[in-house]
Image (tube, rainbow, N blue to C red; front, side, top):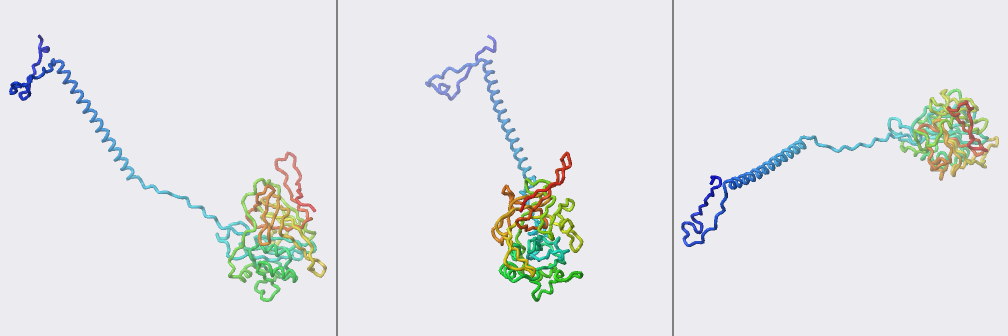
Length: 417
């Protein structure tokens, strides 16, 4: 029999039952006899199992080491990374604007002073006037004989010469009451009007009273009653403790309201009378409307033409009051300033029609377009025309440039007698 097939004897353990010292014990069970080939196969299988186990352990160890390296590297990277900070964008500061023009305040600060209103004549002998282009707002009001007078209001700017100063009228109360207790400089008035001023929220400075010589000027070449002028600096000096700027009268935006048509307001005609036949014409170069009387430029004492960034025409109800204003029998013209009425606003060469409404004299009028949206003005100075009912306000419209045949400049009558 080949050696590979020989049985391998198994010797019982000496201490096992039935062994050498175990006489009388139960004989051992027959041992399992394996051939050499089987034994070798068994040993080979056991060896393979051991290596599989060792290999698995090795893989686990490698994985654990790799994980530790990754974690260590990530932690180190976090430690080396620059600390992150949360940044917030600071709000852009809003530059202060002048309350009566909407323009940037001079030097970034609104002057700590009240509005200063001056009463200026507008007869032909009152002209040329002075200081109108420095005023924030100028109001033009109807007076006796179909003439007009002006109320020039200053706050952010001043003027070295303003005038000529003339007497007060009934419409002044409504104009002044919306200006947050302004200073009012004028040259007298009839007793009923002076009584109205005494009850109004204003600081009355009647230069015909004693004690106001320090605020009056008399330039050469003028004669009474057209020779009394003033300057803004000495008037503000009369109220050094009043450091409260007025509340705004209008709202402003750099662009016209939605729906405004370019070229729809290149001019406007407001014929108060033959002596005050007013026309405003848009100048695209200066971005202002230029004022004329009966077609002649309205030149001021400094030689410049009167100009305005905005022209606001409010049609108002007027009545003839019981008071005589002059020896010729001219009676006081009274303006109903509260309520509502037709409106035309000119800015940027466009015209916006709408309605003005005013609930009380201490509040400014609101300007509303037909669609209910507010009408804003361009930042800058403004002229407000108080046109009596029956005065036709005629707006000039520029012909569209795309017209194949040059069309004549047209007109749009917004209010009729």
